[in-house]
Length: 370
Image: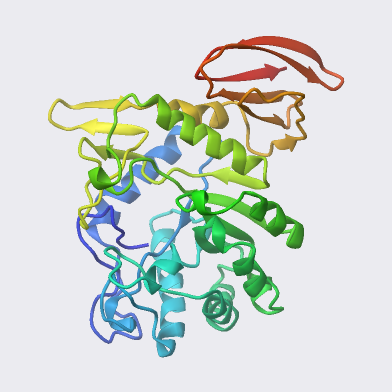
């Protein structure tokens, strides 16, 4: 919703100072010339449909405590209702382009706006603030405007915020009626255990958990090489995280950038990252990184509506695996071997039979029982 760090510039849809009634709200060239045509082309290319969800990085600066797109800043409390109305305006504007949103997150990485000097688009929320805003402003605004069926996800931040964030919002009897799911990013995973996902599911089994952002190489060369064409290690990091998430009640996984340029941009804040698809505009070429194929093992073989199956192993041998049953009755098992050794793996599927596979070193593969 509006600009983010991987935009050419920081912007929102209502940057006119003091426009509380949002009379100047309008989609920008980034939407009309780029996002919307690409979305429509993608929709036209698939028969199964596409589920779109939107996330805001920042409110207009004049709505915030620091009057800026980035840095330590939060939404002014007197702007709670105008900001909720902004969501409605966004949904209406995209609907006028014949594009319907499946879902929304209440805020991208709300913790960032409590970090002094944070260098790209952000806006700070605590779980308590988000609970109040959803209960009193956003939830009622979506219902009153006919968008009550749009999926709403809370948090949209790191795993270490769970289960606390979910407990604060979903234990409120008013806020919880507007919330469908919990959104999750992967960047803070080294600081927490995936058991937090189990705890959250056990507390709120009727709310889904969705992985809404992940990317490799983020932060540029100061952290790690941003664009690394052909990196098998990044395939492994994607596949491992997807498998861990899915085995701990996460229902889906989303990459951050569909495609980036050779420098891992554009990015107005001078950050960079890697992407499954890298575009070389000079030679009019694009390259599919191994990460693209990592995601394909799940998106091509595990169909929408699949149910994750219990999977047990006598000896993991450093293998990661997860299993599903599709609605057509087929069983899919995805196996990642991050070790340097080859293993013979026997797969026993209840009622379906047994399959033996040679799992090569540093490999990712899927087995399907039709």
